Amino acid sequence: MDLRSQREMFSPLSLMIRSGTGLTRALELLGENPNPAQAAAASELLRMLERGHSLDAAFGKVFGTMIGGMMGIAQRTGSLVQTLESLSLRADRVVRQRDEMKSALIYPLGVLLLSLLVGSAICLLLLPQLLPFVTSMGVELPWPTRVLNIVYEWRWIWGNLLLLPVSAFLFLARTREDLRNRFMAWVREESPLLGPVLRKMALAHACEDLAVAVNAGLGLHDGLELVAEACDFPRLSASLKDLAQAIRRGESLRDYFQQEHDLGPLVSGSLVLAEEIGKLPELLRCSARLLEEDAEYGMRKMIGLLEPAVMAVVSFVVGFLALAGLLPIYQVISAPI
Image (cartoon, rainbow, N blue to C red; front, side, top):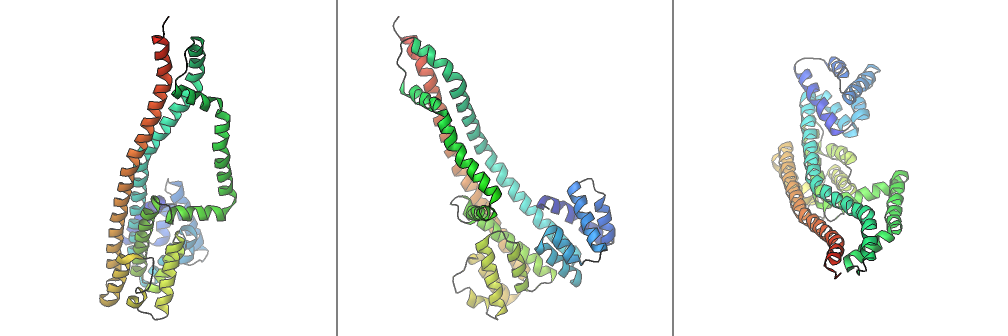
């Protein structure tokens, strides 16, 4: 179930339970919702609970291990409403960030795609009509038109050179899950543009999830292991598991963070401070908020660099196509009769 549907489900579920409605009745009402994804999730939860499954097993099957673990602890500690509210706020924040990222990328990528479509239309439609007319007038083709003509005459070769690797990549992505996972891990953690932004967002979400888990009643080491299992970033997941193991061994956080780690100074400082003064959920949420702001700034900076680069490419393509189309016509008009 995606985060948008989670947000739309956790919020009314927490409101109904807070108002005194039992969990079973609340799920029955959500099962009658016109939203098919929400109704299916609520019906599945209700069916599993009626068959005697525990709350953490039911929520774990529908929403994943991390949310299932949090709900099981929340039920035992009496913090079910607070946990649902926290999960709803967390899903809302992540959905908003993803929507902002998508909307920021739509314009430059749309402009680039449009310029490629216009260029392809000129090559395939205008050039075959223009070249015979110009050559029949005995005018030598200018170099932009000759280059465009070579592209047109070799269009099947260029098309295959682009199509074959793209088709091979899509085929392997669909059939080889290990290669797909390695590629996505590279995009998330190693790519030069998106990698730093996505890593900060992932760390912010991990801090927020850990705050929710601790608030639900989990110990720090159990919360770290739960968040690590749900993390899609292999390096971050390994760092969280390593920290959880260090805590289980009785190692102090201050000593642990003296070593090399991938959690960054903000998170490590918050955890060390929380070890001394408490207030762990508050410090984790503060770290998450600061990391989100830093990631959003990085995204805006990346878009600020991407837009002029795309506009430069589009300007070059449009200018080249204009020269390739207009110069022959100008030479025909200005040629002596």
